[in-house]
Length: 63
Image 1 (cartoon, one colour):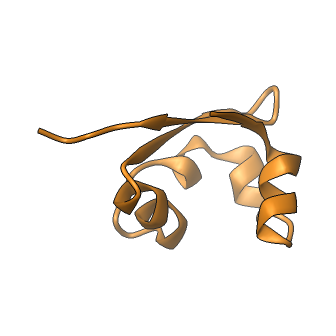
Image 2 (cartoon, helix red, strand yellow; image 1 turned 180 degrees about the horizontal axis):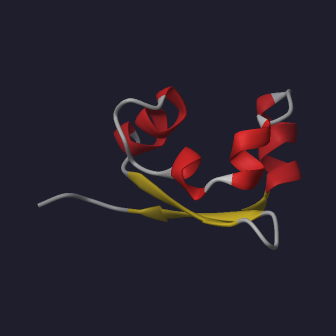
C-alpha cells in the first residue's frame, strides 16, 4: 500500500513529526520507535521515499 505522508496524516488526525519527513530511520522497524512497533506488529514494513514524501507499507510475514 503506497501513501503520501499527507494521507498518513489524514488517517492519524495529526501531522507527522519533522523527523518523519527528514530521516528514514523514523520509519524503520526498530522496537524502540512506538510508531514502527505498531506496523511491525501488524506484519508490515515501511519503505519511505523522503524526496517524494511517500511511504509504502509492505506486508511481511516472518518465518
